[in-house]
Image (cartoon, rainbow over all chains, first blue to last red; front, side):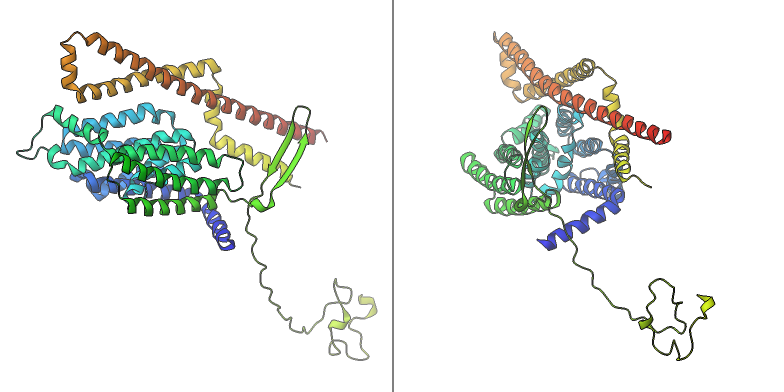
Length: 345
Length: 132
């Protein structure tokens, strides 16, 4: 635990020292990674799929506010889809407009979860979304988490059905049929529906538990959230025949819980063994207060090294501060001679 | 001699000025009713456009059934259902808007009030020191 605390203090100290650069770098990396992942799945336009364009989007994400980055990324998705099929691009545009009209206009702080979602889905740990959402934000985080799942499955569906949607010769579809195919791919996607329901339940449970006045509320919330996520996903898979990978869910949830626990150590480190309960009153209220101290890292005692002082040829005058005659041997005060004459004191 | 407590408070005030003050002053410049009613009006238009998109997608998805409905006597029932869903959708969305912006206004005004109290206190301290 001491090692973890030491690491935490060093990390926080490093971040504080280079806060501006670290924030810009982190935003750039997240946006760049999201663009590369999207282009990897639906890279139909060569210009947009190019490295230079992804770099430019990453730079925009580094300096722009989060909601603007989401709008730009949605624009990239629509532009990519336009090269495949106009209808797919219009459906993507409709999804983007719904996101902006229903949620983005409130400029919420939890929009970063939406930005991180392509990276989490690519790493097979989307199960971190409800855990992190419940720990760090409020119950309305259900909205961006739901949009994140819908976007992820929309992109996956387009990628898996590009032959049909792209109008390969002999397999052309009418516009109406294309829209119905895409909407079928979303609305009848049981895997997506099970994920949305599971994430919504887990997020709300984690949020409620971590706000309770319990000792180790965050640890309880993470553990309960992870177990509930497993149970709901497996139950949903069985009930709705969603064809989810049980091993994938298990490993993904374990890794997500470990990352959530790391977040807890970084952000909410309390010493529940040193709780103080105090009571006091003022003119209006009687207060029952539970004070939980934060766990802090105390560096170990620095090693002391003695440095020996070499004998000086000329000792300091006797009236100098700290002068002690016994520190200076006979060679400084030869017999019969005074170091200083009386009138020189 | 540096007054550490004053430096601490001034640092907190400077941080507030740098980060939140402009946003809170913009909110605080409105009366509560004006601020919330302006946001509700924006939300009304956003909800209408969002519902139009959802209804459009629904109509395309169930195109054949809707075509049958249009040419039958049940078209008024379809229209009335659409209107009822629109009213419910808009009402729920406006309710969320009201809750979110009411809370934002309350916090903004509270933070501004604390900031101005701290500023006045700092000013009084400086005046006392000058008189001494």
